[in-house]
Amino acid sequence: MAPDPFNKSSSSFILTGVPGLESFHTYLGILFCSAYILAVVGNGAVLLVLGLDQALQTPSHLLLAMLALTDVLMVTSAVPKMLSVLWLGSAEISPVSCFVQMFLVHSSTAAESGVLLAMAADRYVAVCHPLRYHTVLSSRAVAQVGLAVVLRAVLAMVPLAGMVTALPYCGSRAVPHSYCEHMAVTSLACASPGPSRLYSLVCSSLLWSSLTVGMDLALIAVSYGMILRAVLGKESCRKALSTCGCHLSVVLLFYIPGIVSVFCQHFPGAVSVSTQGFAPAQAGG
Image 1 (cartoon, rainbow, N blue to C red):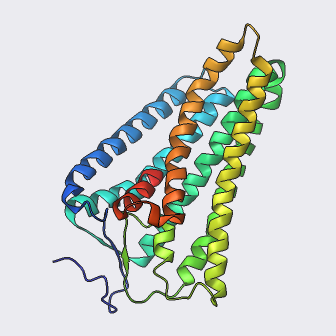
Image 2: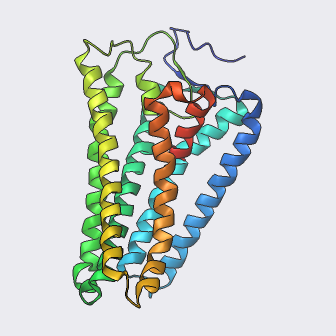
Image 3: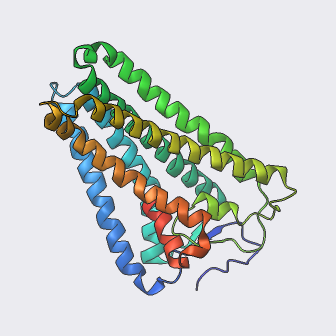
């Protein structure tokens, strides 16, 4: 028997999966499970190779290791629960588990965005200032960048997680997603968007988090613009662009689902309910 989302005696949230596509939950689970296995095995292989080969200790490879670790954290914080919802119908999730999952998903998203920005800066230095590459991007500098990325992600999400936790929740606890997506959970709060100062602070924090990731994307675009300006018309143009191709592909795969997710959240009337439930899951996974 499915849990009642209006049961006020229960404090658990109810993850409904992908609304409108209930009959396809098994197939969606296969899709997400396959993607999860590929992500874990692929990133695990990358980390294993980088750890065993001492020659692969360059700044670009260290940043790649950070990206792999962040990606594993991101998908592991969301996909296992998604699969239990889609395959087993285990829709209930405790408030603590929900808020922890929300924190891990979105802090790892912010961290991955920061790592991608650091990798763009790495490519800029490698292409435009090759003689200063090892001076600018020493092992110590890369470690400092990694620490800064983690601290920024955590500091951006701790206040938001605290405020979302403090919001009062009553009435329906049905989250129209297969994981605890922050906008969907916040919308269940009893606080009115107008007079509630706490609700306004939560919305401001969500906007700040989006602007932080958006700023990363803008800086990545600027770095590639400077690379193009430096190499266009030169013999090294093709070689320079080939070194950036893989990173640019990862950037597009990371940010395009995120942009779709933001569009679905802010313009819910423009897309179907099932699309609203599916697009954020892509961004989180």
